[in-house]
Length: 272
Image (cartoon, rainbow, N blue to C red):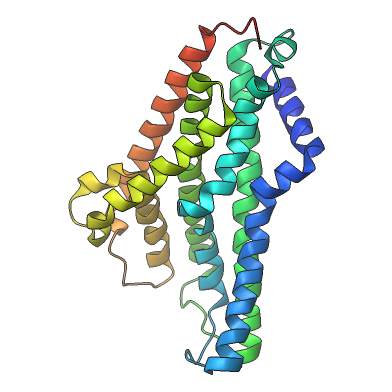
């Protein structure tokens, strides 16, 4: 039942091309375009400030593109469309004729996870291409001194951290969409909450107290920095947040998802 619902959600995304592009395709193009502009401006106008390029470090950093609140706006809009669209177009009655409520909502979560995973990977690929352009302009590149296995594992850790962080945001969007029955409310509430969290967590950017790992942005950064250390980066302040941060992200996702599903199963959808 979940697989059938998942196929339906993926089909909806494939047919809603412009919304899918702005939600999941724009940020990789932005990462590529802004990176190329930055490289040409740096090399042609400022000169070679950094005497070497680091394509693999760039690709690792690209996995964090969707980690900041403002850059999560596209993903938030995508989540609002997926979770709030049925309320907006009053199609729940048609959607739930052949499926139970929980499988349908879980399928929406899975469809979002697949789409945002592709977006995160493409952001990494975009930054890797920027790194190659930097290498061609600089004439010299610095590669990690660790093996290919450690490089792959570091990228996997960074990918998982960003995906987990964005999925927490998506589960919060789902909860707000269920409560408000409105796409706009889900977008605004999620974005304002992320901005407030980033402002409130500024004091925790120096690491130290693991309580700060409860903040999703610091938790994700801590996990990613543990991957950076695997590639030889030593100037990481938040790597100690990796384990507690992973636990915090799991708990936030489970809490938001559970509450949303419980409320959704009891919701009167006779008019939607």
